[in-house]
Amino acid sequence: MVLNMVGFSIFAMAFVIIATEATEYTVGDGFGWNTPTNVTFYQDWATNKTFLVGDTLIFNMTGNQMVSDVSKADYDNCTKVVSGFAGTEGVTVFKLTLVTSGPRYFICPIDDDCVRGQKFSINVESTNSAAPKPHHSVISQSVGIFATLAVYLLTNAL
Image (cartoon, rainbow, N blue to C red; front, side, top):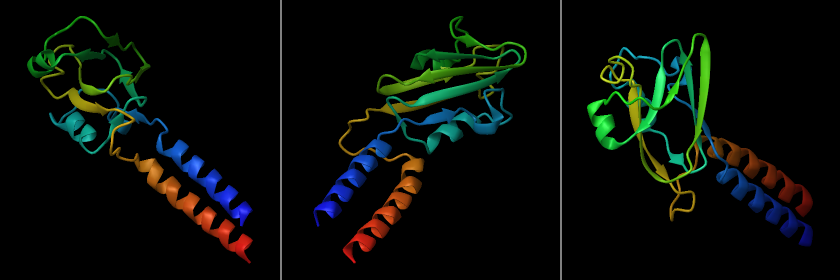
């Protein structure tokens, strides 16, 4: 019985660690950070995701691209800001770890890329919120952990 409790305690700790694991999001998935043909492409990409403090956004850029973390006004107006991370010829990868909660706004201020849809906004949630939403990977990992725990408990109960 004591071994079952030890096994369950180890399982519980592993579940908490997995549930709070940071996630890396590749912005635009396979399309990367480029000028889309659909003006809602990036906002659609971000809509069904839960972003938490500690998560990382990965911007894969090719050619003449730039990503700027801007204010809501600059986002709404597609302001041509001069600060940000610029891509170069070939593929450039820019990683941004989300360190604070709250709304965030990202645009490409080059030419009319922002107006054409190369922008998105997200709300970054605190990792210690009252009702955190699990990451998609947590659900699939949890099924495996529960199955492992069930086998462990059944084999030790016999």
